[in-house]
Every structure is written in structure tokens, then in C-alpha cells.
Amino acid sequence: MSKAKVLVTGIIPEQGLKELKETFDVFYDPEIETRDWILKHLKEYDGLLLMGTKADKELIDAGSNLKIITANGVGFDHIDIDYAKSKGIVVSNCPTGVRVPTAEMTFALILATVRRLYLYDKIVRSGNWVDVSEQQYMGMSLQGKTLGVYGMGRIGSEVAKFCQALGMNVIYNDPHRLDEELEQKLGVKYVDFDTLIKEADVITLHAPALPSTTGVFNSEVFDKMKDTAYIVNAARGVLIKQADLIDALKNGKIAGAGLDVFETEPNIPEELRKLDNVIMSPHAGTGTLEARTAIAEEASKNLISYLKDGKPLNQVNK
Ligand SMILES: NC(=O)C1=CN([C@@H]2O[C@H](COP(=O)(O)OP(=O)(O)OC[C@H]3O[C@@H](n4cnc5c(N)ncnc54)[C@H](O)[C@@H]3O)[C@@H](O)[C@H]2O)C=CC1
Ligand SMILES: O=CC(=O)O
Image (cartoon, rainbow, N blue to C red):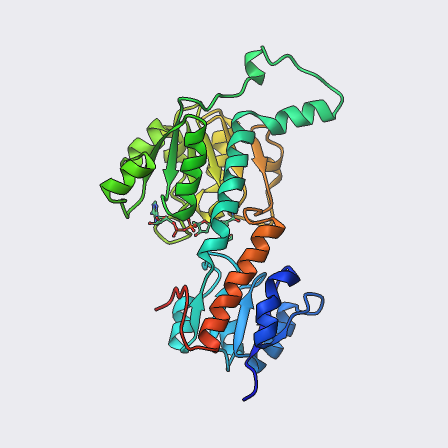
């Protein structure tokens, strides 16, 4: 029997593709795989490891022999999962490999934001110096402060643990409340959304991009937050109305922001780039060799389990 054919898109560490290459006939060449190339050749493949482009109707239609698409990560808002389902295509994701690396990045953004590392680095790098006894240069200590987690799933709960190690109290809001035993074990307290935004000193976003989460963090919310509070987003840009955030940051409605994701990604408005109370990264939550290798291995397992054994793993469009 001939081997199944798998197309790998995006830029993936080779070592993460070892098992996939041993099992299937794999094509992977980031140099030539433009979207046009993918659309032209996708019909030759049974499986797709997707990164760097959208699996919209056009792409799914182009994959007339596709049986499975696996996201190279946990988020699948770039995949039309219902249309894929209507075509009998399994869509899967990689929830395990992203968990700790994205929490690490979030934690880095929280610390960098509240301790004002962007501003300090800019001052020192430009050959200047300041006296941090002056209030305008002071940051905020985290010990004893309240972390508000919006979306207490895999990444949110990991970030909660990291911040508890620094002595923070953790409150959270999520439509799926954890059971009380788990809340106690994690040391986290469920609150309604209004309480979350009013009480948190740092709000960290970990909900997926959904119609119900889009634009939730807007002017109305920034008006209710403490003016000393910070917001960190390593989930998806659409959760925050970017124009409202810029206004809140410019007008002292909140103290600062740490952003790994953006509503207009990868185009970041100059108005945001000019602000000293923001630190930004280029959607780098899983940007380590270890993480990208583990994610590629997880994606490979999804493909192998379905194309070889007929068993979908991590399916998100059942
Ligand atoms: N910056 C980056 O590089 C990365 C970003 N992500 C993003 O992080 C998101 C979260 O990932 P995981 O923790 O693995 O997902 P998860 O599914 O384990 O957790 C998401 C949580 O959000 C909750 N949620 C859903 N709707 C909500 C709402 N309206 N309000 C509050 N909470 C809500 C869910 O109930 C769930 O508990 C992903 O969907 C992805 O968009 C994930 C990995 C890397
Ligand atoms: O943004 C990355 C993901 O895994 O989702």
C-alpha cells in the first residue's frame, strides 16, 4: 500500500518532523510554498500540517483529497472548521506543546510591563540615565497584588501558578467555572466579569478568539479598570479593541500593556508603537526551539493517528 501524502506548511523545526517523515511521504519546503503554490498542489495531499496561512473555504476546496488538517498550535480561528467538517475533513490542534511556553511568555510580558523594562531599556540604550526614585519612573511590585485571568484554561491556569509564586492573589472569569475542588487546589477565586476588571491589578487574557470574546476589552472596560492596572494579551488580538486600548494608554485610564498579539497583526499602528507604557512581541508565545519542536511532534501524532490508524486525536470539529 502506498504511503499517505502530507504537506507541511510554515517554518517548522526539522527535528519535530522526524516521525512524520518516517511514516508518510512528506513534502516540506518553506522556500517555495507560497499560498498560490499551496492552492495549486494541495489536491495531491491526504494530510496538511498548517502554519502561516488560513484554511478558509478557498484552501479547503483546493484540498479535494484532504482527510485531515492539523493546526500547528492550539488556536484554530484561522481554520473554517465547520466547512472542513461539511467536507468530511477532520481538524485537530496541539493543546499540550503550547501550554507552558505561552505561559512563560505571558509571565515575561507581565514582569516586563509592570517593571517598565521597555522604558528603562530605551533610556539606558540611548546613553541616558534616570533616577527611579522619581514617581514617573517607578514600576509596580507584584507581591500581594491581584491577577485577573480572563479564560482559566490550560495557559491561564499555568500563568496563575507562575504569578502565585510571586505572591499574587488570583481571581478569574470564564463561562466554564472550575469545580470548587479544583479552584481550591489551584488557589483561584471565580468572580463575575465586572469584579474581574475592577479588582485586578494585572489582567491577563487567555480566552480563544470567538464571537463572544471579540472586542470585549473596550473603552467601557478600560474606564472601569484601576488607572494603576496593566493588561497583558498573549491570546488573540481581537479580544481587545486596539483603538480603545491606545486611547486608554495615552490618557492614563490604565497604566500599561504587554502585547504579544494584535487586532491588526502584523501591522502595528505607529500610535501604539510610540507609547512608552507598552511592551510588544511578534506573536512569540511559542517562539522557542523546544516549543516548536514539541508542537510539530504533537501535530505529527495527530496526522499519524488519523491517517494510519483512523483515530482522530485532538479533533476540534466533531
Ligand atoms: N500568543 C501565542 O503565541 C499563543 C496564543 N494562544 C491563544 O491562547 C488561547 C488559549 O489557549 P489554551 O489555554 O490552550 O485554551 P483553553 O481552551 O485551555 O482555555 C481557554 C479558556 O477560555 C475560556 N473562555 C471561553 N470563552 C470565554 C469568555 N467569553 N470569557 C472568558 N473565558 C472564556 C474557556 O472556557 C477556557 O477555559 C488560544 O485559543 C490561542 O488563541 C495559544 C498559544 C500560543
Ligand atoms: O498562537 C498560537 C497558538 O498555538 O494558538
